[in-house]
Length: 153
Image 1 (cartoon, rainbow, N blue to C red):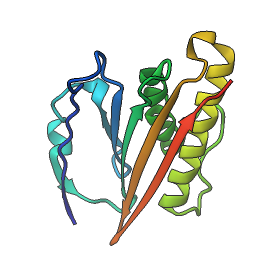
Image 2 (image 1 turned 90 degrees about the vertical axis):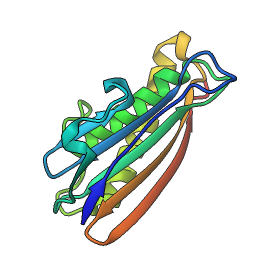
Image 3 (image 1 turned 135 degrees about the horizontal axis):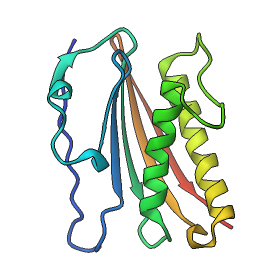
Image 4 (image 1 turned 30 degrees about the vertical axis):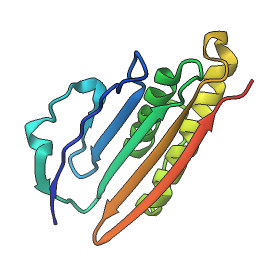
């Protein structure tokens, strides 16, 4: 399957700061791109053939009105990336025989934990939150995961 990727984020008219983040993760290479890497997608990620390991696409948005929403959305995409690439500092990761969507679910739960713990450790992040929507594409399947993380303290 040929994949063509485009992603863009805009602050909009209401907010001052952009709390959006996205992650494009090609697990075959592994190549990543997120909003913080810049507006232009890397040439090699604009169009490619879907590999055997699959592709993960994630959008995370800091919850408007909550403290540190930009921090929470960044933490969410970083947790997904780290769990799926096996570089999670907390050691939680995917089981070797787990499906890609199960790995994405585990990564989402790790993001929840990371955001919650950060809100407990840092009073500037108390109550922060983010939404996360992820897609796992592998072979001829598309699975979706959705989560809202609010760290209530």
